[in-house]
Image (cartoon, rainbow, N blue to C red; front, side, top):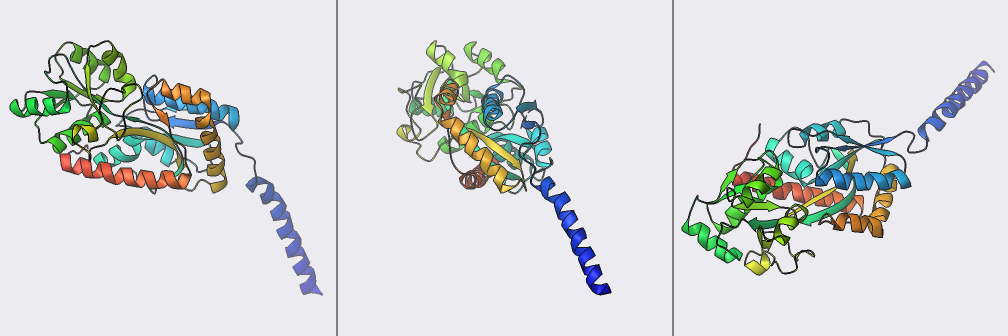
Length: 323
């Protein structure tokens, strides 16, 4: 009888614990404001795209705010996101820089594949190669011939370790030419120098280059993608220019700290994909020269792994390293 009473007491205690823990573990999501860390300064294209997504999430999931944490080639904000509580209330606006290039350059700070739970891809944009008025080339073939005839004379804008830098290094390697990287903290100054004839080449996303191209102040030689850019239908692709193996796009997406529950990831993925299919978000991304990318978290995970390997190979080939 005593044993039976103790058994009943233990069962009653366990039931009480379940009643206390149960509601806590089944709390609705979100239970507070969602913070989207953007490892870039306010006002740039990555920040603008992140705000488009945050606005949509605020309307479809819960209030979402932007937390800009630039610095150390995106590592500061990215590491902060990786270390956050994996409860879906802290997300990272990831990109080709933070999830592929920066880890390859630094190494060891964080693992882009195991350190995060991929949520959803957002958009991508091809890189465009433009030259200034002082460069006598109308095609990639013209440019390569001129560069080979004048080794070391031409320079290209290269924020150290950024996508424009890697794009130039990849182009150098693919064509066997000698062009010189010139470090810039901000690309705005590089555009000014290009127009003044002090900079010869810029590799960057179309949204930043289109105004100069349309005004005839810079010439677009090639789209570094498998298909032509919608805003530049007359500019050939790399394959059309004789370099089928050279392709480069900048991309971004949303990731969460590793260990974030699958149900939360799935909800965020569905909401983001719904937004990317909407005419409003498509138009907003299109105005920035980007195209929406929808897909599953699993597809995004495979994509990140592939991109991390590609960029690591490019960094090694270029002999680049950042401490």
